[in-house]
Image (cartoon, rainbow, N blue to C red; front, side, top):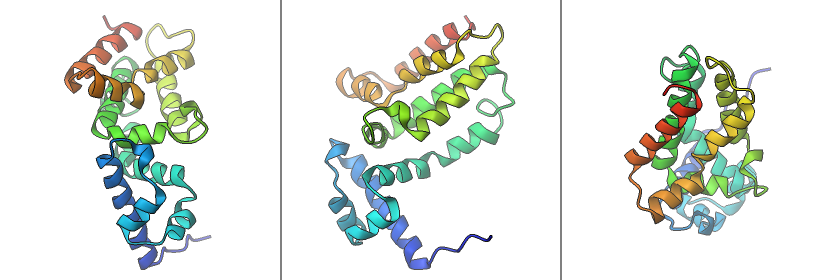
Length: 194
């Protein structure tokens, strides 16, 4: 069965909505304060278009993040070192975490909005499950291994949570490079590279 090609006007509307949502989230002091009405008005489409296309605000936020993170996910799934699957696990783990932290630093408000959506638990979100599975699988293959790579993956991912990133950058004025270096040092201890 062939997939039906999207109509040109529907594709334009989708791109306009994603661009408007992305811009509004980036400019907003509180991503939770951006409404579907705001996004529809900025995109020049009806509110119904947003709901038909994305389901709800969470679906829209997920689509914006997915559009932004696509190249990173591709590098993790199929790319070369240091993110790709052929990279030795002890080198790949810190590279994965650094890439995720860098993405969240570059997209602070958007990732914060995504983590604040849904059931109140970011651990239930598909994007979290993907990162956790990737990291846990890689941790399991590190020399010496970890008895519980699933727990270790959760603990390491906690260091990249968007609310923590926002607190460290926004409240404590921590520089991005300092945060990245601290995470690298912490991760190296976990995977036994120090």
